[in-house]
Length: 213
Ligand SMILES: *[C@@H]1O[C@H](CO)[C@@H](O)[C@H](O)[C@H]1NC(C)=O
Ligand SMILES: *[C@@H]1O[C@H](CO)[C@@H](O)[C@H](O)[C@H]1NC(C)=O
Ligand SMILES: *[C@@H]1O[C@H](CO)[C@@H](O)[C@H](O)[C@H]1NC(C)=O
Ligand SMILES: *[C@@H]1O[C@H](CO)[C@@H](O)[C@H](O)[C@H]1NC(C)=O
Ligand SMILES: *[C@@H]1O[C@H](CO)[C@@H](O)[C@H](O)[C@H]1NC(C)=O
Ligand SMILES: *[C@@H]1O[C@H](CO)[C@@H](O)[C@H](O)[C@H]1NC(C)=O
Image (cartoon, rainbow, N blue to C red):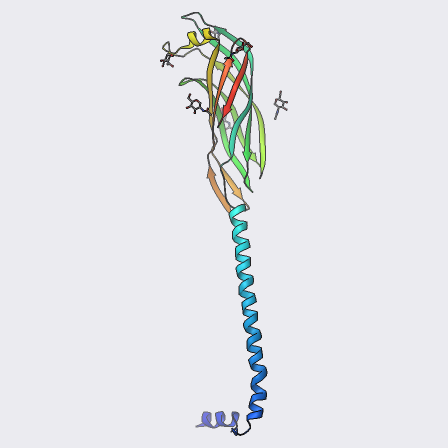
């Protein structure tokens, strides 16, 4: 009972004949409605545009690509070879520049790594790349050394005939285990591999036709 009386007292009876007053009250209300509708459209458009900007930012900046590992050059030192069977052998010191190119918008860290030189399927020597940290959108260069020894190669290899021919086909392989970290948001494991082919020209004592993929 008390509630009913309160409600009736808050809403005084209005006569419907005063339509002018009603219009005067309703008109500004309607235009306010239109304004707030426009506002809502602007806000929504803003949100959509911001989302598009954020998405394209994310797709460019947060997308992780595998860093590239390559040999830029290989120099030969202390080259000694003997093609007389059965004692055919080859010894050399190979110095190489390894590059790690990181195109990501975050750093690439890799664990202790080594690269190997092989002849056919046989390993001739290793070089230490070590651990590393490549800053965002930078390329690290490091000079590494491998002592290459052919002793221990099985006899069925064509070493003596290859040495006799004056050139040896060598390959270098490395795998870096690491991760790319972008803005403390993305943390992705990446294990770039290096595969290089080259020809050791014995008479020149040089590496030629170095090709990495
Ligand atoms: C290469 O080095 C080994 C020892 O590491 C040696 O026995 C061999 O005679 C060397 N070969 C040449 C051609 O000097
Ligand atoms: C890196 O690895 C090499 C052999 O693979 C090892 O001799 C060396 O001690 C290692 N270095 C570190 C810091 O772990
Ligand atoms: C690697 O060696 C070359 C030639 O000796 C030198 O010019 C270059 O600065 C070296 N690079 C590094 C990173 O030590
Ligand atoms: C040695 O050379 C012959 C002829 O070029 C080839 O057929 C054979 O596969 C080679 N052996 C090895 C171990 O590379
Ligand atoms: C190796 O070097 C010699 C001397 O410079 C050259 O005559 C020869 O063509 C080279 N061998 C190859 C396979 O390019
Ligand atoms: C290196 O040589 C191997 C075998 O001859 C071949 O399968 C590979 O495609 C070559 N790689 C490059 C980068 O030329």
